Amino acid sequence: MGPSDGLLRFGRQHLYLHSSERMPELRSGSMDVIVTSPPYNRGKNYDPRYSDRLPEKEYRQLLLRVFRECHRVLAPDGVFFLNIGDGARDQGKSEKVCAWAQEAGFHRLQTLVWLKTILGKGHFTPSGQGRRFSNVFEYIFLLSKTKHPRLDVRAVGIPYADKSNIGRYSQVDLRDAGNVWFVPYRETTGATVKKGHEAPYPVELPWRAIRCVPQARRVLDPFAGTGSSLAAAESLGIEGVGYEPYPQLRVIERRLATPFHPPPVVLLPELERSVRFLADRGLLVRPPGSAKLPAREREAWDTLGRVLEALRGGLPPRVS
Figure 1 (cartoon, rainbow, N blue to C red):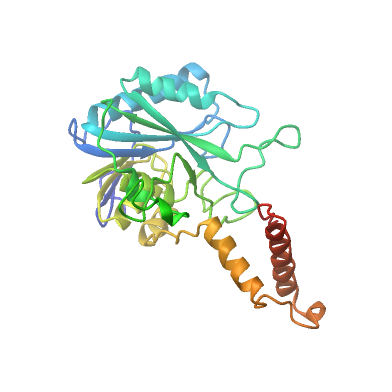
Figure 2: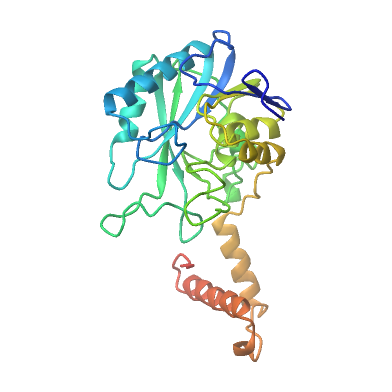
């Protein structure tokens, strides 16, 4: 993988090293899915050559130019997943960005929520700074050129927790997971930078979005960043196109070269039943002399104790 005439190639992926304000390489109506997260204009350190504190008028014009090109290249029945979030002190920006996408010609179909953390699982930026509650979720606006695009929500469905619903709502053990997606960051690198970039999103996010579009053949990310959308497309065996004027080549290479495998789905009711089953049979007993166990093992037993206490009280487990 290396730059050649302003283009990086990796497998089925093509990354153009210029702004997506113009995408002359793409034919009109040629892309089936667009998944992207534009700059948030919140002072993030994307690249020294780019200011993430543009006056709102300039920020709006930048996104309008990109969104109009996105509208041109998206297939008539294609789908556009637009991810953006508010900061604790910057509420309402996401709605403005979505409105600009609508101004460019898109229909707003639905709002999804990307939940980054719950009960201590996952990472989020402490944007509240002790004076407001930190935002632990972002929005994903579902957009299209038509009000009735092709979409298969069960392609990223989950099993029923209550199996009696099989046959009532579906003939198979698979249900719509809903419009709240819990996708935690699996890891961070460094005290200030996640995965070598100021604002990446997990590959699982575009992977889910692409999976929802039946017979998707071509994916576009006009703000490619670390290449998450392209990595998702590559893992799904789909052609992807990205635009990034300030590429961090090593980060992109590493992400594209790492196959993505979705984590197994573990339903909380199933986990609770399993813990109850083992506890009722005396199989979850703290070993004698546990005070002398290594710290991580003691912590595990302490956590398990809190889970069992919560289950006995009929309360949701509080795991910290």
